[in-house]
Image (cartoon, rainbow, N blue to C red; front, side, top):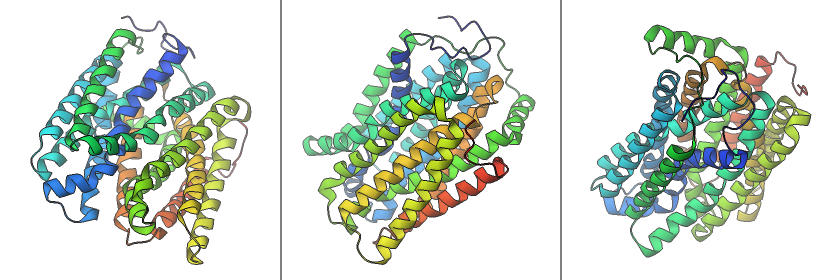
Length: 408
């Protein structure tokens, strides 16, 4: 495989566009399935490994997300130095091994260690994948590609809990990790056979000085820093939802058997939102769409808090409003990511790594605080979305110097 011939984004996929989108989505989905497929299995894992407290079981997800964030600091600079292909291949191999160890875990501590290692490894599927897309696209075309990627990617949240429940019905929770390992191997073979090296030109030497310089460029660029922090606040709300939704559906609404439907409803709306974004972003612009969606998300969160305060919340209303909230989240976050990478083409791997680290690690911390605040009601979740939305809007306002909703 040879590298692309230009150091600039060509706004062209290195092979068939549809296959490119599906491959990128599949790579990113490997990280997501490690979260979503675990949700139905948390009680079974806790029972088998002696973890009685429900909130303590959340660490199975939390430590994975911590590794997913920290690992991005490693993969991005390495991909700028050695290329996207070798780093991704090594990371996928490591992720497969981590899932084998998780399958064989006989203690909660070993399982958490395997999850941490797996999160660090699979972080490449986020940071290197974003760098690959940035190698090929920029600006609004990149936002369009990422929206299409998320549409395919959202199949995972819809199917993963069902997959986890299916495995539990016919076998042990250990089989979940085994299947994830097999899926990783399949995507790895596909990547090796089809994806060329997209990093063209000279490689960035791997040194502490250049690494610091790359981080400085990323963190001093107004668009990069502003939209990274704004996306991080939203990511925290998302992680809060992921870590607490199983308990909410089971404990608050006494409808644990409908968890898959709840996930399908929210994930389906996220897919619809990204489809809409891919169709209109070239015409309306990333800023107008994302800023409007952010304001709408805040408004819906206020409605959720009001409904809860009047004691009229029920499962159907929760799912409908949460789905609308997640749709707004998708419209905002997809465009935030593209705008954060707008000026980072020369150091796409390093920039994606530090942006991803901040986004996932800080988002996981925020999400953990929201999840650990669960005490039998949906209030922490709704307040989490409201506060994270307000913080995100404040950051965007500062980054844009007060000029919101611009069409360009």
